[in-house]
Amino acid sequence: MFALGMRSEIWHTVEQAMFFGTGLLFWWPIIQPWPGASTGPRWSLLLYLFLATLPCDILSGFLVFSDRVAYPVYVSIPRLFGFSVLKISNVRPL
Image (tube, rainbow, N blue to C red; front, side, top):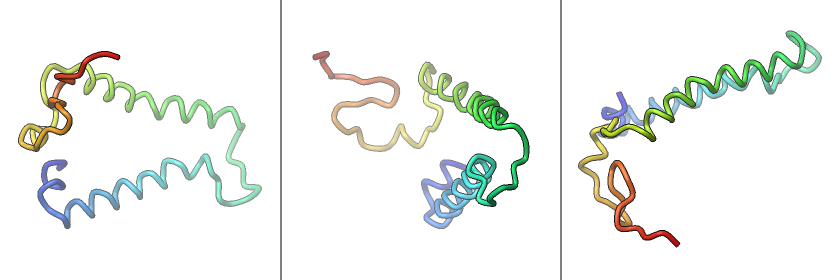
């Protein structure tokens, strides 16, 4: 689906709209736009946020420490500033 979104402007727009919609659904319990309608104890919001970020943390760890390209579309794009797809190359430490 990601590669399709990179090739088609229409599917990219659909993808971005879905990201926006799921973002609204994710933050709705935290922001609580309806005043005074509490759904439970305030500490449960911290538990909600902690548990909701675990899948993102696992995915981030996979992408950072992977020895293969997860999104093949990045293999064919031009390199900027000497960066490779998997690691930084030609960059000297300060």
